[in-house]
Amino acid sequence: MSDDDWLVLDTGEDVLWSGHPRLTTVLPALVIAAVFVGGLVAAAIAFNEPLIVVPSLIGVALAGGAYLAVVNTRYVVTNTALYRKTGIFSRNVRRVSMSRVQNSAFTQGVLGSLFGYGSVGVEAAGGGAIRFSNIENPREVRALVDKHATVDEIPGTLTQWKAVLAEVKALRAAFEATQ
Image (tube, rainbow, N blue to C red; front, side, top):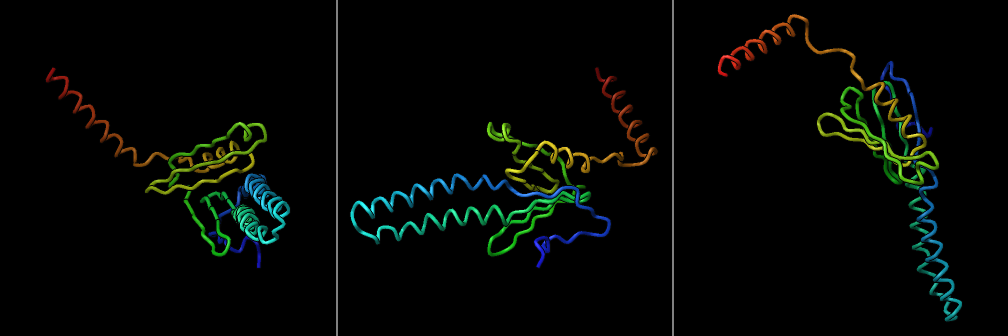
């Protein structure tokens, strides 16, 4: 089974960028687990009670869960949509069409600015949203989204816009007549 078997692209849809959260985002969970396990081992030695070490499995499980959450998250930007796949035991795939993108932003903390990682958030019409967390080069990913989400076409025909202009002129004339 392929690592990308979850991604089903439409005809003419091309992958422009693919990524995942930085593995270093697991470090806080590993440090907490190491301190927890180390404390329990020290207590087991100090009290000569080996069973005190058994709860340390909780710390190991939490660190393992954080690692699995990071390595099982994938982000993809195509010329027509954004995808976010998450899940350890199950799979959750979120898709937002580029035609629905209304706003995008990227954020970087102090460490993210120093080491070139951050997050990209995208808001979509109809209340949809998607977030790519702790990715490399978030500024470039946001620029890519903005480039492909931009609609260069003005809706409506020239005749329709001339009718709108005529209506606005009539409203202005009516308003100025009341002044």
